[in-house]
Image (cartoon, rainbow, N blue to C red; front, side, top):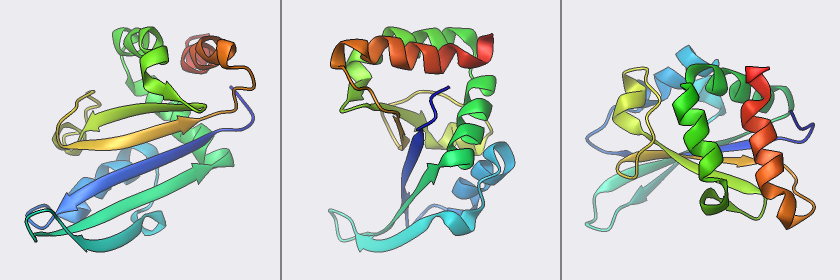
Length: 143
């Protein structure tokens, strides 16, 4: 696994949602305390109150998150990520979205609706090596 690894997590919490319920799985599954999340109150498109929640994991925290994340994913999910490296990568950042409601249930499911956005950043010094760098990262726990 790369020495330089950053994980960014972004969540939009609507007024109708329970913030604790959404952030609790991060603590239970990934040992990420709710306190490290930054919370910004704002207003949505229809004047509804929403909270933007985000955090950036670096060093030991990012590696611990990645290790746990890859342990939980199925082999077919990891294969899917590897197959989609080119479409999901921009400027050394791998983008993925997890279903927010499924995460509350303790499951990691890729989705495009009502999601938690995760960016995995590791240096890729030559763009043509992007696939190799992220393939190695995703396969690192299988060895």
